Image (spheres, rainbow, N blue to C red):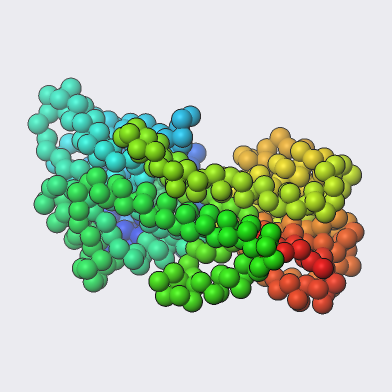
Length: 442
Ligand SMILES: NC(=O)c1ccc[n+]([C@@H]2O[C@H](COP(=O)([O-])OP(=O)(O)OC[C@H]3O[C@@H](n4cnc5c(N)ncnc54)[C@H](O)[C@@H]3O)[C@@H](O)[C@H]2O)c1
């Protein structure tokens, strides 16, 4: 099938490469010309495991087009995968989606199935339809088109495998033709048709928010339990295993930590609260999910100042991990930004190390913070440090050489924002070890 994809971010580019992998002819566009030029030269705009290899293997079926009219030529479907960042009021800014819809309306030359993959508030499919129709009317065109909502559930860090083997594909549309076309397109990904879920556009749009809000709620719930554990003398690591073994609960998304981040959970929970409010409903549980998370991002700095005092001037902290989670270079809403912001605001110097996200951190979230420097390795970062703060659980931090670390650190102190280590082992290694929800070291 010939398809176009608008927006070459994590979702659009991964989707394009996966559709091409299944033999489709995929034309890609993005308003960011530098990004497009890089893609034509094989340079990926984001780090995502397996993406570069997949794009390179499918170069013959992937076109990084000069413009949308070129991309739309003889296409049957056009996907919108542009960003929907948070607007000033906490809601989702759908202006890029609607602009893409207008562009499609201005340039389509044959009947088209328009598919919204971006995460958008309920009712956006209708607005996309209106935006396209208005442009067609302005051209006095009577071209037909269909609209479908197709929310994306891939996770950064495992986006390629998630996209190639989705748990389910959700299609929201009132058009049987659109449903049939998308069923054909997705057939190689969901061999078992039970996992192809057809519903109305509104329910499809809502499903994406409900899924992210549920996962975010599990994390905030566990962080709340962790904070209580700490105060009453329980160990959240044991509690986690205790509740996770209940099959009704399970182990996913119940790891305590220093808060969730990323381009989805924070903005999607807030957007859901916001459009619920617009519809006259105060979503109190979801507001609390967000508030608990915002507070949780300060927990590490609170532990540091409880140990070293409120004035951290003259102290150096090593920070391991900057990206919002491992296996990505995405810094959007990363917990590291709050942790480092708190430490440096209290006068500390931070030497940070991340396997992939230091470039993105320098360019965006930590830009201008002259109390932050970047190390070439995790061991370089801890040299002369008063303590190590672990923020993102990259695999390379799982089993470091504690002897080497201890030798080079000023104080053998670790604040672990992801509970990666065993407290008894840490004691054996001679470290003062602070984690989330598990009391203080003796
Ligand atoms: N990142 C994720 O893990 C993830 C997962 C599921 C769903 N989503 C949702 O998918 C959507 C895209 O997310 P992302 O992380 O890929 O975004 P992104 O910010 O990485 O990329 C968006 C791209 O769209 C481009 N763009 C913006 N307006 C455009 C326009 N009018 N025409 C052409 N290109 C345009 C931007 O230049 C950018 O390259 C969002 O709604 C997001 O919530 C993201």
